[in-house]
Length: 152
Image 1 (cartoon, rainbow, N blue to C red):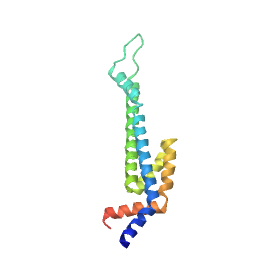
Image 2: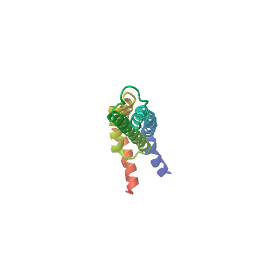
Image 3: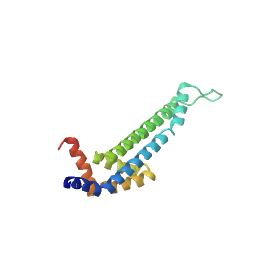
Image 4: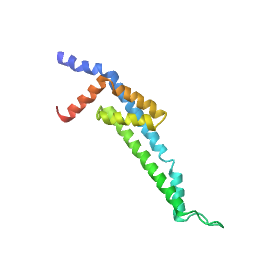
C-alpha cells in the first residue's frame, strides 16, 4: 500500500503542470487551425497568376500583361501557402508533443517562433508556453518521458 502512495504523490505534484501542458497543447491546435485557414488567403492571387499564365484574361486594345506578372502571381502565393501550411503542421506537432511531454527543445523552439510570427495570439501563446516549459518540474516531466522512451 505504501508503494501506491509513492506512485500517486509525483502525479499529484505534477497535476497543475500536466493541466497547463494539456491546455497549451489544445491552444496550439487552435493556432494551427487558424494558420491553415490563413493559408487559403493567397489562393486568390494564385488563381489570378494562373489565369495570367494561361491567357484566360480577355484581350482588349491594350496588350496583355507580361508573363513575368503571371509567374510572380503564381510563385509567390504558392510559396506563401506552402510556408504557412508547413508552420501550421509544426504548430500541430508542438501541440501533440506538449500533450505527450516529449521533444522539449522542439516545443521550446516552436513557442519562440509563435512569439515572432503569429502576433498577437501566437505571441501570448508562445510566452505562456515558454514560461511553463522553463519550470524545473516541467523539464523533469519531459526528461522522464524521454527516459521511458529510451528504456532507461
